Amino acid sequence: MRNFTYHNPTRIVFGKETIAQLTSLVPAGTSVMLTYGGGSIKRNGVYDQVRRALLGHSVVEFGGIEPNPQYETLMRAVGRARETHIDFLLAVGGGSVLDGTKFIAAAIPFTGSDAWDIVAHNAPLLSAMPMGGVLTLPATGSEMNPSAVISRDSTQQKFAFGNDLLYPVFAVLDPLTTYSLPRNQIANGIVDAFVHVLEQYMTYPVNAPLQDRQAEAILITLVEETPNIVKDPPDYDGRAALMWCATQALNGLIACGVPTDWATHMIGHELTALYGIDHGQSLAVVMPAVMRFMADQKHAKLLQYAGRVWGINQGSEEARVNAAIDMTAQFFRSVGVPTKLSDYGISSEAGQRISERFAQRGTLLGEHNTIGASETQAILALCS
Ligand code: NZQ
Ligand code: ZN
Image (tube, rainbow, N blue to C red; front, top):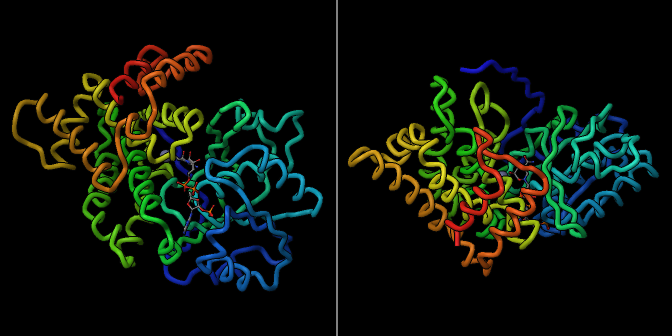
């Protein structure tokens, strides 16, 4: 097992009707900016619950943060927060609202000449505004991690950045808020959480047995609970299981002491930036292809995954590995997320475009940094 430091300061408040606890979670006497997305929170009653809990606080609102949050929109929020002397941010929504709010938190006190440097160059931060979150879409893990992914339409860029100053102070996770989610967003959430685990597990063994079992526990729970998660009308325990799985999938715990990959995410972000597909959709396309392309390097973990997660213990090693990859893609399709570029109307030129971008940036991905421009093109050729 590799050396590691683990510190996660985010307080999680989990369960039914917990939004009322914002009254005491949001520090008294602060001037709060309430950030949200395109209006789902107004339609499903979450907004009313939040406003009720904040009756004793001074609140400024900033709505309209879009999926794959846009730099230009967020800079408007930064301007507004500076003008109104905000000292606490409360993000209410999915990963995009949380991520966008992390950027706002970083950019408000930023003194550099160009706030885009925070995203594009992970510019050092001296401070950040404190923020809390109310999560309404279990998927990204943003509620309990210090990372954010920000997009810029004008340049078709989508980059991740992170800073320890950006852990939310608290996150309220009420599974009831997920009842209004459309089926495709639930499916995206299942895929995103599943792939987060795979990116931290599907590498090579380093004698980290607990981390392996923790990762497998999340994967198996997601597979077993999927029938409950997608039930209509919604099933509370199924939604609660998804919510906690998604948080645990990317709060740093399972990454302790192990190598990580993230090639699927980095290639997926390019697909979203260039072709506009959802984050979860991009992962469902790329993950099986990365496993196939890297099957030799990932052989030992793929075999372990085949046996422990999918119960595939018969046949040659190669056959078990292939069956596990097929089961993964089949699982994504079974929840309604297609796994081929052509399913989204994306032609094979995507491989060329993305590999050119990676060549220009000198991008090297994967647990061994062996996935460069030409390997990315080969991976995307497997997705057509
Ligand atoms: O904008 P509103 O009206 O709120 O609607 C949203 C949005 O249209 C809707 N929604 C959210 N909660 C709802 C709801 N609709 C009905 N009922 C509810 N309870 O769902 C749509 C998608 O929301 P979004 O926040 O974009 O989805 P998600 O949570 O999947 O976030 C995706 C973003 O997170 C980034 C992705 O790249 C993408 O930009 N990621 C962030 C990560 C992180 N911070 O660690 C890691 C991830 O790998 C990911 O890259
Ligand atoms: Zn993700």
